[in-house]
Length: 159
Image (cartoon, rainbow, N blue to C red; front, side):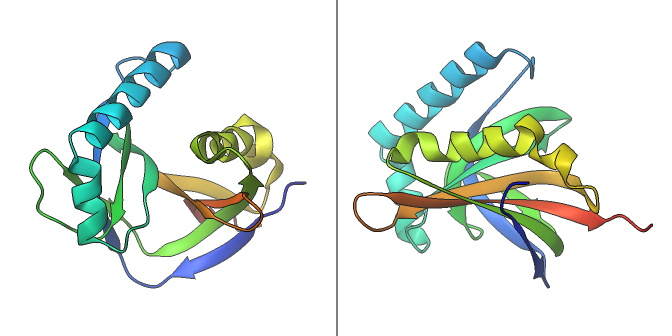
């Protein structure tokens, strides 16, 4: 069983991000390309830096559902009025928190996401993922390594 914890968030909160909508959730290669292109675009045009400066400087990667379609984005915690950015809601409740560490900052969020959705959620039998989204952050740790966490809202399964 993988390492995880449950943390309770007492109040709803908002995140502000730039992202892309996926037409076919199972088009892994196409979705990865769309996501990478969006990340490059908002990095090059300074929009991501603008958001980071408004918030606490911590970048997040999001998976969410907007208008019934899967969406992936990059942004910050908090609600900010920035052109072309989307404000998404995260609800109070219990959150499954899955940590990870590695040396490749750009791959760590995807590695944690892959671990969670690649089988870990099926192994956890006392909680179920209820969404509507999840977020992952990565920050520098020690010795050139990086530390990250994925947060997913879950509900305890009553037995």
